[in-house]
Length: 517
Image (spheres, rainbow, N blue to C red):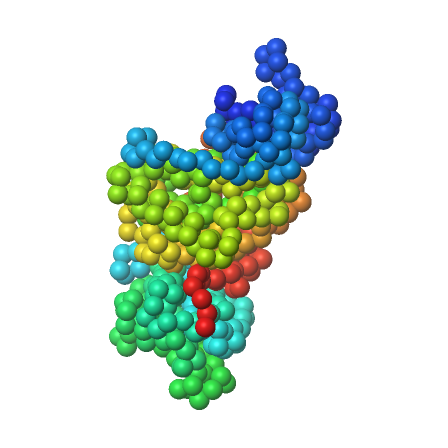
């Protein structure tokens, strides 16, 4: 970053804090017109400095919105963070459908090179999945996948791999209950995903999360290659029925070897960008996430929606405090109320455990400059751009609407992305300020750094550097266009940094919020 670039950034004319573009020594200045404020102590990159006096109980404002309330007198030049700010109550007065701005359709619709399944869906990758219904079958799933090494798959270049989709649950909850249905919906979402060319649904046999329950209640279809339906229906194996782990693994491997030529029998072809479904995620966030990477991703989201595609904003606990901005974009009061209902659910859920939603931001978020959940949420929702909110979905629910939507997921990244992929997302963009090393199979993940020092430090993991915005080298719009172009390239087969490292075998993480008995 050039020294000529101002060390602090004010994001809105009503803000009483500014954000450090880089680490600033004591005496570093923010200037506006004839007014100058000097830092009374060092301010780390992404952290905030007050530019006005703030009395106890008065709000601190960033993005033009309250992010918390002063707990002690704050003077111009003071560092503003958890030591002098608390959450307080915002008491939003919700508006509905008052800020609807439909996107302008592009003059020249774009395409990507994807796989067209026979049922019409578009795939960006072509995997075989070994889907565990319960943790008791997780090791068997791993053994099956390990049999398909690079040597064996070398003869099938259109097969991206065999991925074991295993998890830590699957039993000890009510049969047919909310948690059982949610897990089954997630498993079915992966089994039916366009990026899965074939799969085995693998159980132990005695678990609550029966494979037969998933197949019968969630319309499972076995896809082969171009998407032809498997005449025998979904392929289900239970270890107890097969005679143990070794016999199950042998049968599964033999079966999949027979399917490999069929799954490989696909070719990429031009498909309208309107058939991309984008999962947006931010993790390991810092004080610059809402300044650089997230708003840039919001630009890319708007471009995708303008092309007729779908963009999903998730992590409802990280919408908390900023939901009033989304209800204004809801296409109807009903849709806005659906979002508020999910907010209320999270408030009640936190109370069950004597917790507060402000337990998020995490330790790393706070080290990166985020002070309250309100601040984090205001930056996080920037990923959703500016287009109308078309619908709100529950976790892992199939996403049917085109345009910008919200899915109710937790703030923890692996279950959040898992839910969106189960809902149909076929591309992921993940922004990070601290340096999350996330990858996902069967859906590629593009990672965007919020700042240049982390991008340079973790260059093997980051695909795009939005820190160029802080450095004065690019605008938010320019980086947003770059992300949009990368989405198209990766959907067409370009390998991401996480794919190059083989990341994604362990990140399947269904969210089951209820008790385990």
